[in-house]
Length: 108
Image 1 (cartoon, rainbow, N blue to C red):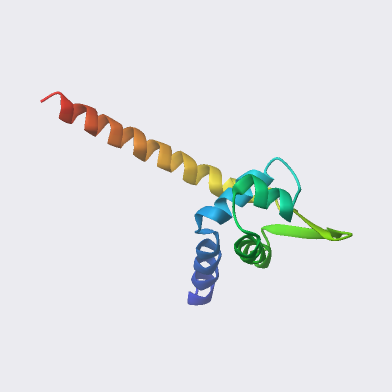
Image 2 (image 1 turned 30 degrees about the horizontal axis):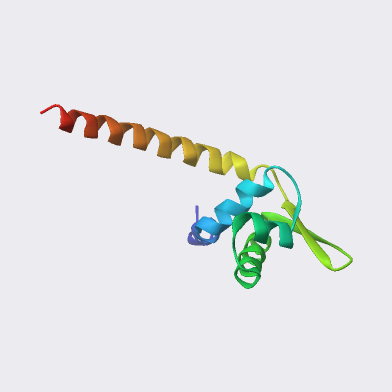
C-alpha cells in the first residue's frame, strides 16, 4: 500500500479520535436527531457541537438534512459500527486483563 492510502486512513481515524465525536456517533446509533436534541442530551454547547458535527460530516460518517430552521443528523453508513465495535471489544479485553493484574496484586 502506498503512503497516500496510509495517510487517508490515519486522517479518518484522527477525525474519529475525540470523545464528543464518539458520543455523537453512539447517540445517533438510535436514529436521527436535531442539533438541539444532541446539544441537550450530550451537554455540549452548540458552537462546539457544530464543529464536531461538521468534522464527522466531512469524514462521511454523518449526513444532515434541514427541516425549516432545524438541522437533523444521522449516521450515513452503519458500517462505522464495524470499526467501533472491535475497538470496544479490544478495550474490554484490556480492561479485564488489567483487573486480573490488580486483583493478583492484592493477594500478596
